[in-house]
Length: 191
Image 1 (cartoon, rainbow, N blue to C red):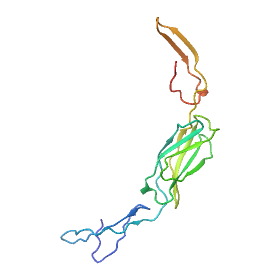
Image 2: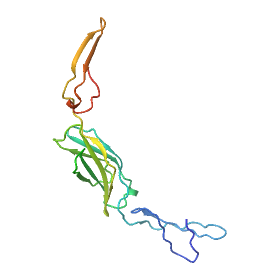
Image 3: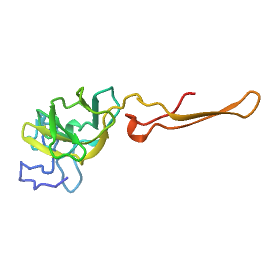
Image 4: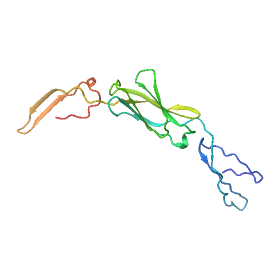
């Protein structure tokens, strides 16, 4: 801490975070040492400022049919820089120009689900999440790609062949459905 001249009775504390409550104590010092600290001051909140921190780890995916799930890590209260804090979620199909945006007004929210029956399954979307408070909008997170929800496969494997390899075993082989004929990632098969 800065040492203040013994004839001065005020000080300006700098480098504090916006919209955070602080309390202060003062100690007297001389050549012999430092005395006991004063009682704490009343708590005082610094003024609001535009948000400077964007949500971390923006990702998503999964969900149910016709959903685009977008997730992020919430911004801690001490970094929100003001009241009225919330998130702006923007997304668009990969390769398109116009962003769709929605406001999520809760500072504790960590997820947004866009539902639309015409949403194509397992399709890539560019997503980004921004922040705002009473002072205005901050910046957006970097853009990341998230896929809309998958659907069950609509095509069966093809070229199914069975070959006897012993008195009690049969080897079964098949060709997977064409890549563009299923609406998700094939995780496995059942025989």
